[in-house]
Length: 106
Image (cartoon, rainbow, N blue to C red; front, side, top):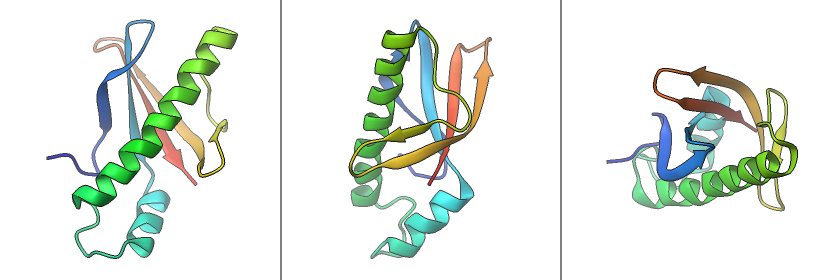
C-alpha cells in the first residue's frame, strides 16, 4: 500500500537512468492533513491518488527542465503549473542506487 509519508516513486520516473522519487515535507504533510476530509489522509487511496497526479506533474516538469537545460532543478526551484506550486526544499543523491530524492514543500 502506498502512503504519503514515505518516499513516493513510480517505475517510469527516471532521468538519464536515475530513479526520481519524492518526499513531502512535514509542512506539506501538515497542510494535506488540514485540508483532508478524512482522518486516515496519509493512506487514504483518494488522497494518495490525487497526490500521485500532482507528483507526476512535478516529475514532468523535472524531466522537461532536464531535457532543455541538461541538468536537474535544484534547491529552491519551484515546480509550477496553475494548480501546483511546490518548491524543492532539499535534493538528495544516492549514487549506489542511482536515486535522486526531491523533498517538496509548498
